[in-house]
Length: 402
Image (cartoon, rainbow, N blue to C red; front, side, top):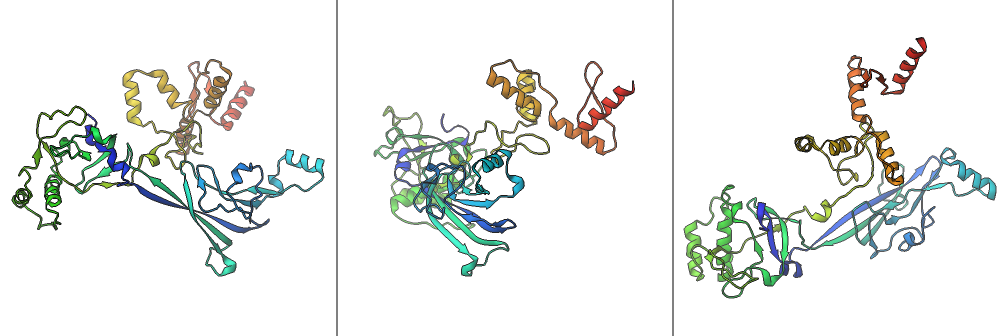
């Protein structure tokens, strides 16, 4: 059942031998600019940062090669001059108490983005003073390369050369994989139901010819429009002393018993695709919201939420899950007052308050007003609900007239 819906079963041997292990290198860079208030500086002396966070930085604030880093680690320490307006009242108070001009800089260091970890393998510095061609206003650029080693695991995507793609559902111990009469265990199991409806028979022919090629220790070149015919492939299988239809009896690795039917066996090229489960893995508690709709942003890169589309809403409506739906469409999304109140009530252990008006509804009303349609909203008692400060002013003005 583990190869249901194009899923793939693989042997642990493939993982152990690093056959599909890949190294991924990501580049992160930071510009050091000349600002109106003075130049930015590379430094290890970053305000409000613990010594632990600085342990791999050199005296100039640049990470050492070979350092292991994770989400939020500082790669390059940088400070930017801060204007007087940016200083907080508390900061000014401390200045006046201690009588010293405290550091008027803010932390603008380069950090590892969310969801990335690895080892620093290289650091490059480009300087205008040394003749490097940099953008206007940029004095120096520091680039840091981080490498990550990824072994094949459940959830990674693989494909053959015939559009026969699938996701790894399970990595089985070598001894549990089905094996042939000569004791050879299989390395990959695919679902036969992935072939008939898609009619990509090339994968079957490749598997047959691949087995013959392995046994004959030969290479076969099958260019398009001149590829090997089924008859030629059967002939090669016979030459190799293999069954003409490439089917053989297999034993179950767990019980040692034969399977009921013969199984199609062979050798095929399989590739690992650049859709790795580690890159897809994502979860969010609270995070950034869109400025216009006030809904959570989308996508892992923005640390966004899971989108609840029309179809998901229909599913919940059909199920009659009214309270769940209301939560998802208001306090878990764009009801600005509701979401801060619910947070408060959870912390204090109080019962939840009623949901308010979602911000997206306000956006719709404002859009209609932009089309010169005067839209006003009333509650069940006939009292007008203000959507903006201007609405409140108008309601108050009307009230004072009566």
